[in-house]
Image (cartoon, rainbow, N blue to C red):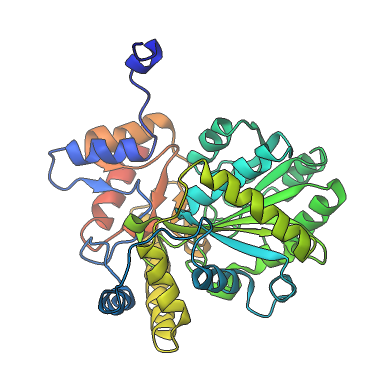
Length: 402
């Protein structure tokens, strides 16, 4: 039996990873890649954290077996992740109604959550912000959801259109799933205020919706606890929700694919029942999680000496991103680039959205070797002393002649 005929037609490239491949094939000197969401230092290198190196040394010294891990991951890892996200003393943790499962990165956590909902008869509609991470719609379409969007920013792209967002969610049907960015919204960098998080929680409660929180950047915004504040507003007594988290960025473990999905049920008994279904969807997908990255994260989080050192490394990455935001604003204002750029300095996380046209994005790439995604999503963490001024010059030239 031959392969399906459609398999012989090349699929369109991924909007982010495909662009990275094009960048690598570009032979021009001075090219600038701000498309991929990776942190780099002043030299343009994505470093391995010193705490990760130390944890790996300890793990190598203690290595004894490479046996399969439990379907939902090693218990120590799951407990540390749950405490990191929710707080060790949170009612959902101490009551046992929140259970964590190791997954291959945050993407794996989202897919496990999607399969869990679909396989157990949950809602068929997934609501997500417009705009959102480009992989979100593809992933949930593939899982069998009908994808709908709710407005996020106003026409300026600098502020959340609160009434439009809440109005759209008020039209969702009971059982629908609402995808929310826990912190450091990708691609806008604009996050809800504490008051807006409360209002979102009220709508979710009134409409009996199921929140799915994508918490991929905890610690890259304002701090570990600060970046979990919006999520915690949704974890009300008896509330039910799902959280996907990732350690690619915050531990600089991109290649290890370390993440988790946390299911918060109304009771410990319900959480245990849901966990059995989580294991079932994992078993027919990848069966067991990889060990190394999760062992690194567990070792660091559980160690009284490594944990504070990692938090300092995390703070250094966070502060570098904030500094890059200020430097970018200064560079654009110094060139009198038309537009309101000042808000970039107060946004949070790795990304900012410049609001460019597709033609302007293409010109940046073709004429200047500057690679950005979509309507000008840039990775602010990708700026270095060598590429920031060339980027600002290129943007100024493109906007001035558009």
